[in-house]
Image (cartoon, rainbow, N blue to C red; front, side, top):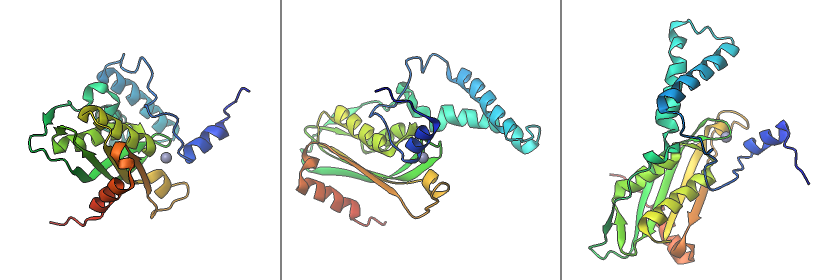
Length: 225
Ligand SMILES: [Zn+2]
């Protein structure tokens, strides 16, 4: 049966934040245009939106907004769409033979909801058990940041972080938990400022109850210095 997606269906899909795939839906020609070409086009688009809203683009305060937003989209908040920006996969041999879990917690996360283009702000907690390969600690922060800099749904972001670390570390024993506020929920729509969304992805040994519990216990540790 052919399904016709009406505007209402698309809208309710967005408000329910249902994602469709673990991969970011990018077109094949996503990088045919240079960054500068994209900025020029987006600048015109933002100008058009503001003009349609009835804003006076000659006003000193508004004049620079289209250019500012276009640059921010391409070079900052959506920079992670470009595979060239993926953090380099430099790994090391696990010389200390440290065989326990390593947790990088409270990684600051800024992303953007792909259904409303409003911010997602939260914390990511990432863990792995080395099978002989380790990565620098900041690499975990960088991987989180890279995938966060895309239009996202939180579930997909969580999965993408785990998959990437599984690839880099050559093990399935990777886990990620994200606890984040979505401004599309907090500041509009249902306008619930208190609620946050928790997603998790547990690979390999982290599917086992005890390992999972250990990870959760580390996250709960109150680290104040
Ligand atoms: Zn949203």
